[in-house]
Image (cartoon, rainbow, N blue to C red; front, side, top):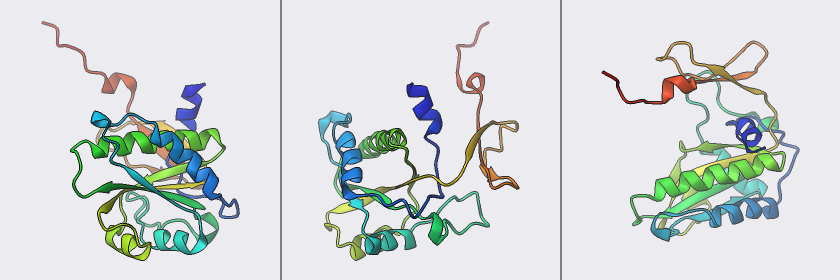
Length: 193
């Protein structure tokens, strides 16, 4: 059921580093992003699959993980993702390229879940450094980084209790908790007199 895919599609930040991904697996995810809707059908996005150890290290060293977990420096060597997909866009592009990137990222993550994998969308990346070290085309910018791997953590959805507190957190058993607003809190209805 589609709802099950959405529920399993959490922002995983710890993975089984022994579960290697192939370029073919990443290409299968990119193939689904390729056929996603694109504003004005411009299709400005490009994709760079990362699975080789030396490239994985370049990307990993230049990411910042989980802003709310101030005490955590990111996954350990045993918890690193074994693949990344860099979503790239031209310097000069439509104002909708971020929308296109979001649609592509979510599609790839849902497909990853279907394969028993998981991932995380990361926007906090040293873009210039990664671009230079991977020798990416200079006319393309890194829009988003998608970490992919076999999840090695439990993520639970909680109800938001305090509307001003939506920070995710980890409990004493290292379960990652993500507060979500209730359906009633997010639906806007017309005011009645």
